[in-house]
Length: 133
Image 1: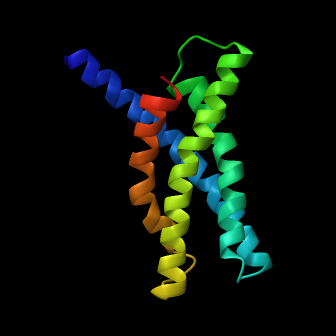
Image 2: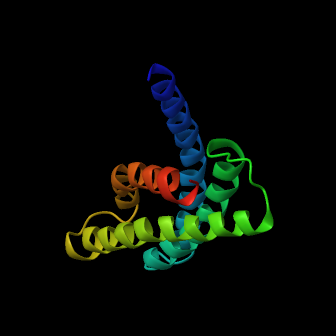
């Protein structure tokens, strides 16, 4: 049991490292879009998501959730499930972003960071137990 807990913890730490990199990629794209047009926060969120999910899949497939099956069909299946998993949390974070910015008047700069408190743990469990299992 101790080995399983240790393995799970290590895997979560790897996921967290990938997540930090992934968050940076997403936020860079998001803030670049805001720099071009400060009213396009939803577009920035979409573009940041598309780029960051591709980034997350690469690193998670290579270093976090290795299963030994590198066939094209297995990789495409995992890629599709990854986009679906991140798609679910994307819809959640986009809804939260709209609510926070348009309804509650929160900052479009800070709201995505608040949303990470919900989406990071949810993404880990969706990826671990569904996309990469």
